[in-house]
Structures are given as structure tokens and as C-alpha cells.
Image (cartoon, rainbow, N blue to C red; front, side):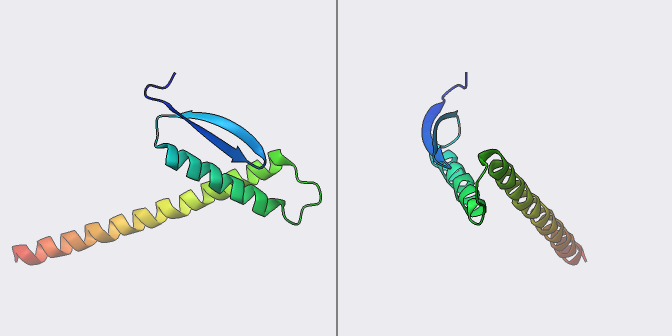
Length: 93
């Protein structure tokens, strides 16, 4: 059991779930809302939506978004480190 767990009641693609989390409930609810939005977005244009496939598409989209943000963070971190090194070099001269 998760210590200090709180319950979040969420609805994803028409199904209600009770989730336990030690994270902020607002973040859990927001994450579930994003999954719901993606699944509903992917369901448009599909004659017979398959929840399992839509969930997989949503998971892949979220993983892709995360990868892009991680790469952007790495690029930013590298830029900051290079700037700090330049400033440190200029100060020491």
C-alpha cells in the first residue's frame, strides 16, 4: 500500500476509475484528463473505436511528447553549461 495515498476518481474514455497515488491528486486528475482527451481525439474518424488500441495510441503519443521534452531539456542544460563555462572563463581572465 502506498503511504500517504489519496484517492482520485477519474473518468477516461467513459470508464470511471479510482486511483491511489502519493502524488498531488490534481496532477493525477490532469494526467487522466489528458489521456481521456487523446483517446477521444483518436476515436474521431474511427467507425468502431477499440479502447485498447486507443489507449495504446495515447500512451505512444504521451511517450513521444515526453521524449521531445527530455531532448529539449538536455539541449537547454547543455546550453546553460556552455554559457556558465564561457562566463567562468571570461571572469578568470
